[in-house]
Length: 402
Length: 229
Ligand SMILES: Nc1ncnc2c1ncn2[C@@H]1O[C@H](COP(=O)(O)OP(=O)(O)OP(=O)(O)O)[C@@H](O)[C@H]1O
Ligand SMILES: [Mg+2]
Image (cartoon, rainbow over all chains, first blue to last red; front, top):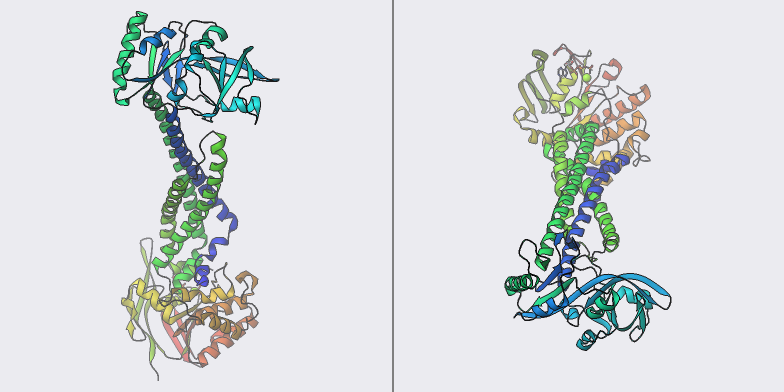
């Protein structure tokens, strides 16, 4: 049996350099196609994970004008008109489940000679449940601690690791911008959220102490709100809008706050990722097309060089169909060879690059199947022309010339 | 005498060179008996190869009728012709025309690839014993470029014989060989013929021609002379 295949395709491995050259284009095309598909899959999973902490039931009132760009809510100016009292006023709206004032700033935190700069977020006791953050150690804020300006802190997972290593920090006292705070809890690892902020690189303290003692201001940056029924979201959004407009005495034109929904962030985000991934996908398909054309070119060259062999095969009884099939399969073998190497390379690259770019690690099963399928199709496509030429070789012309 | 293996009736072949028709064969009549060793001689350009290609079913006559073992093969389509070539004919060329990447043994086995019933178990044994018989027992795994001209031609003979053909067609089989290799090849041809194989050989070397049993001379596309040896 082996003999049959050896007699049919032994010629493939005769010119090794040429085989390598024709395979390289396919390798590049397939591995990049696979990589891009894997990144696309991982991005989808990442987005799903991200909305978990900023769900469809969550609203954010942001002080000032906000532009949503590339999935990021960007504050275009600092406004000082959003006050903690505004948050209190919003509590009256029916259908609101949780609400938390929010102040954010940079902070230097310190413990036993370890210093690092991180993001400080001032919130209340409802913030953790609202964002669905869970605690690895310790406990949440108490309502009383918020109201009485207690200097207590919940550490983000990375901050905890950097300050305390494997030790339990609960009960220890750290310095935040030189003020002592007692650690009451540690967040479980969360990762990057929908607003592209690394939720593991932060410290949470009561918003009351954040604005009064740490930053010494009388305003907040935003209000997180979650509603009981996401289908009421638009209705509640309207109420928030009218209450705040009345309180701030602003109209649509000079409004000093913006309401951001998960929907808005997600929409902008998927738009950009979709655009990006379709661009990259078309580039890698183009790579594959170029690779396939390379196979066509090299197969055509091989057919020209092997005209004599084809002539002999025909003289001793090969039909046109036999020759056509031989060269068609030959080009599929070449592309498949490149395809297999490309898939292996692509999988290795995927497994290396995904974690490097903070994407969730997935084993790209569907991308593997699609790229392999595409390779076979492109192999046939690449072989059609040279194989047709081969099948039309006239034995007498060749056998005549010595 | 015995059965006619080849009957050619008024075979004509005209090539079109640009718009000018060029008649190479001008009415060839030929009968070849089972077991004959026919030599076709003639000067260069007289149409020997053209005639042999027509007999070998590699080329089609412009007009005339051709019967091979009683079948009118001039009416067959290319698929059927390929089948007949594989089943009934063996070819030997001046330039050997071995497949360069394949070993001697693989070259010999190549025609079996196109046999409808495929390989059978003892094909490889048969190929090896054919090569052994032709004095290549030691070189069955050698590539063509590792073999001398005479050895290559003997591989080509083994390849022609593997399908047990009815008719062996040889176009200047010694044209690229030195005199001692030529003698060896001719010795093989004579042995094969003695065993009953019908051979048609083209040559313009009178010494080589003497190995045949009958010589026909072609001149400008027509037979002019015939002599029995
Ligand atoms: N495909 C073709 N198209 C046009 N003319 C051809 C073709 N093949 C052969 N000829 C011409 O036909 C004539 C006979 O050619 P052929 O090869 O049969 O001669 P030959 O007797 O075998 O010669 P040689 O001894 O040189 O091999 C030559 O003039 C040749 O140029
Ligand atoms: Mg000739």
